[in-house]
Amino acid sequence: MKIDSPEAYVESLRALERRIYLLGERVENPVDHPMIRPSMNAMAETYNRGDEPEAEELLFASSHLTGGRISRFTHIHQNPDDLVKKVLMQRLLGRRTATCFQRCVGMDGFNALYSVTYECDQEHGTEYHERLKEYLRFVQEENLVVDGAMTDVKGDRGLRPAEQHDPDLFVHVVERRADGIVVRGAKAHQTGALNSHHILVMPTTAMRKEEADYAVSFAVPADAEGITFVLGRQPSDTRKLEGSPLDVGNPKYGSQEALIIFDDVFVPWERVFMCGEYDQSGKVVERFAAYHRQSYGGCKVGVGDVLVGAAQLAAVYQGVEGASHVRDKITEMIHLNETLFSCGIACSARGVPTPSGCYLVDVLLANVCKQNVTRFPFEIARLLQDIAGGLVVTMPSQKDFENPEIAPYLEKYLRGSADIPTMDRIKVLKFIENMTVGCGAAAYLTESIHGAGSPQAQRIMIRRLADLEDKVRLVKRLVDLD
Image 1: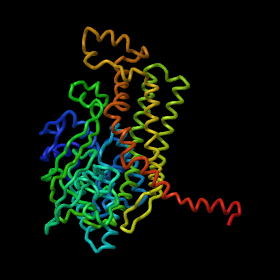
Image 2: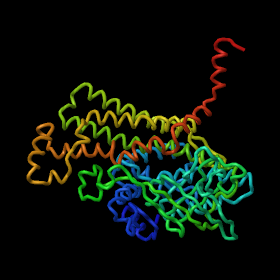
Image 3: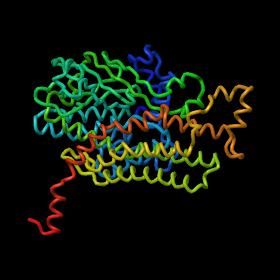
Image 4: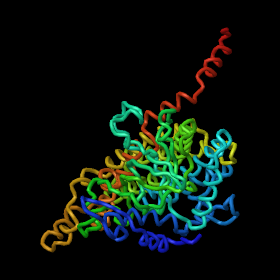
């Protein structure tokens, strides 16, 4: 692996010449920009071997293509154990960073496309699977970050892609050439796109015959001509510009989303993995969604571990750790978090092979996992704020604590337990603020609802896969009905 450390990863991004906008201005040096660097630091942790005893086994795998040692983020799942280790890896990294480490979408995209390109070749006589395998070998050898881009901007949600007033509201092919294709459109809410070396594009929904130009999947370098990134805002994000790490709450790590605009971007045929096979597009969406809904049973749980720890610390620092209702609330936080983890492990352990050899999770249980993720983190955050108290949203700033005229008053009046330094209490409360109403809430809360599909998308899949007729037969047999 050519990129084999966090430092090498950061330096590799310096070599990219990208068109990036933030707060209305062009960003020339995203690597060192204070609003971007925390998200890059979180991504860099995926390159950090760390000191956890299990880290080596979880972060790395053996490539089924080359036999070489590779990052698990570039691996194709070969058995249920791979699927389980994926979830354990995600929990480990969530515990390290307390945020989204952004590399899962590309991994889930690779695994979805691996099985679908194989089946597409069988049905249509195409050559997409071998192209994808060759691309994977390259990604594994270089150890690149590849952003998985699925969500189109969609325009009028009541209209199909081909019915929109503007055809560019879904990414589509605008020209087919002898050497490749030209695409146009945009992908929204792209977590980690700015910290990626390549962009892997997939269709956002099952396409119909008249929408064949929208049934397209390809990979391009992040600095390809015609690509523009416009970074999104997060709550309290400009605190990162103030030079007050305390007020940021989680100053080292964060996440970052972007709108990726494809303005007539050229893609060579060897990096095209679907082009017009509309009957295959729905399979990409469903399999990607299943993998990514599984992912949330790991990453959100790792973050949840940190929030449970923050609740316990806040209780100790405020002298209420012995109160029965506080102990019960922390127990409930643990219960909810471990329930999410149980779903992630269950859908992994029940994984099954696809014709390509790649293993797919139990799709029903993956959807149950994500449905719980749309709810439980909010209850965990509510209980955390309940334990922490109102000071979470009324604290003075770091600069107030640095002002010699008022700092003694703040030290005196904002102290909790007498044996705990005031600033220790404030650091924990600032972290809780970040995670429940600040920048951290973007990844832990809102993303828990809409990431990997909205709650209703999971409910549709749960009902479709539940086999209600079989359950009705069970009752009929027990009560002797025809």
